[in-house]
Image (cartoon, rainbow, N blue to C red; front, top):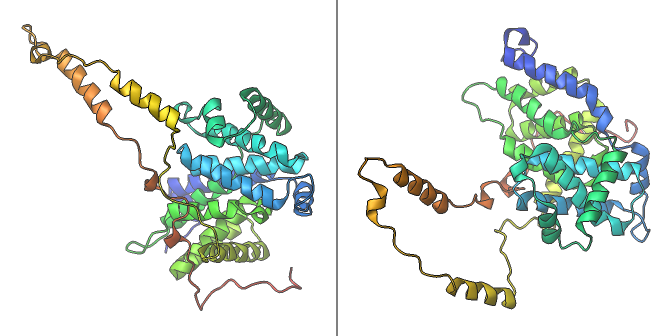
Length: 353
């Protein structure tokens, strides 16, 4: 077992620990306001304010948008962070929540994704079936940007999860089962869909997810690494135990048959009869193109530029879109935690809480 604190002899571990220290200094800056979260938690369903249930429904919509447009987990987690921070600062009526949800997703996509992967305003409105206009969306994005003081690139549990995972992987003995990062990201998405985890510090939530996975793998050696990461991140034992139990319960609830899981089928466009009629007519109205003679591919001077250009065109036409099934949001085989009789984490008593 390698010592976590011999990082001065390993440049990669040294960089990871430095990055963790930087994120630890910044994470409190991007937390939702606790008073605002308490106000949301006390909101009843029939009140003219956003309740925890409405918030969770909107986060589910953000998850669907993330998957539809092929955005990353980082974009989804940032969108949830922007939503929770704004809701904790501003009193939002339920009728404005759809516009707010699209706005934070668009802001997160523009912050994280490449420009070519950022969905347009019109595509977002068309896919979301929202009644507001593009000007409404831009106006809401401006409000969110101003209320959050332009601090959109936040430190989230996604960043800590990747750094903690990198440290754990560095100390895994060769031949042992590796921690699967996609699995941890899927579990993080499941937690983000629950309002209670809006109150968790990103570092604590990330370490709780990693500790639960180490527990399920029954990897005793890594428990020491979890404790050292806990000490390095200055996370109290009480906080780790408390959020570890909530994460574990979330995974159990999700794996139950009563839980409504996302549909992993491919999205299919539903076209109206009138649109189908126009598509059919346009198909038959395409004129027949003449056949390109083979002599074009090679002229007398021996130049094969034309042939190369055709091959490039053919390869681009034959390319198929990326499959949606390559990365599922919540793979069910990832979310069935198994209990371990030698569990080090125990539910804190009422007095300790």
